[in-house]
Image (cartoon, rainbow, N blue to C red; front, side):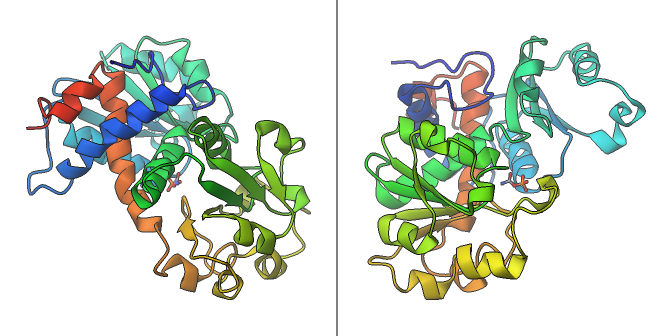
Length: 318
Ligand code: CP
């Protein structure tokens, strides 16, 4: 059965279990492309993709660019600082001018929640959300789920706790939507000041203490403290945060089983996660980054009209 994603990928909130599974399944054969000596397949030959990043990024921007190039698309990177956005040009005018040059897709990261949908509703090109404000970061959650599926075989019934600054986190929101849709049990843990009000209404359990979360979970997705999005007064100090909510080897040693450790990056080592854990045997932080390329290849490919079956049968892969 062919599953369509529609025109744009703005988030996971409105994707079905079948659509999310189709993306993860399509990513599987794309993993192998990145292991080849010549890391290229012709699937998006002739397509032009613009990566429009209004906020800093290392992993997302670079892995989208790798994904596009490995699919043989032509790509252009636009950063706000080097474009006419810095002279006051609006997002829509910028995108319409790019469309006038006959592009096919836009990957956008923006500081405002809703920016990707706003753009997708106004231009004909496919739009992919690479993170919009505190709203969603769908490809991050997809790569997190692919990594969990690699490690555990299935997401169904898995106990995943998202630890840290959930309030400011688009990664948390996309993970909550995606994981619950695939049948995981999801919890959040963090200081009350960094949890959204009524977070339980998203279908998650709340652990006020990280020790209790560690005892319950199969996997922890540890979030960065987003200091740049905080005004003041969310936490007493970074040292205090590490002592109470930091994921440390000492706290993990008391867990009844080995927990799989995820982090979307960039990490604040010694704040939300200690180096011993981040670099330890149960960390999948670098496999997450590797899977990011395959997931983004899958999203680009499916939005461009590729079928899941063609990807797995190999017809687009040689
Ligand atoms: N995880 C993530 O979005 O990282 P970047 O900000 O480096 O893209």
